[in-house]
Length: 155
Image (cartoon, rainbow, N blue to C red; front, side):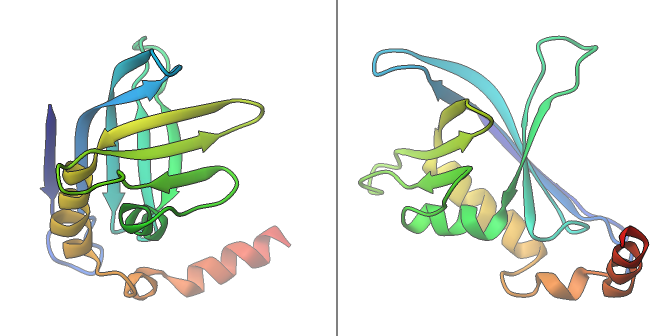
């Protein structure tokens, strides 16, 4: 099951357009075992280079586990194997039947291999995320003065 929806702001410069994709993915435990789990992908115009991946918590008093993924890397991984180090993404061997997009996440000594519906992710990226902010135009949404001020305060 998957759902995706777009939440648009008021069209002003401070527009906080967001799109979310909720779907059931699989975490691969071994060649024979995989667990189904709900996942949420979030794209916000306020952070135009990033797609947030949330793994919901089993407990209401614990926040979800969050990974920040490069939207460009996700887009590239839909087309061909992509990524190094902590995040690697690759499309199904044959895109004719849809198949599963694979996402390998590596942390401090741990890893997780996710499989999610390829066609669902591709459709969401194209129809929602890239509609909000086309690839290559992300930098227009960054307040570079604010970034420089934060850097100066940090130094």
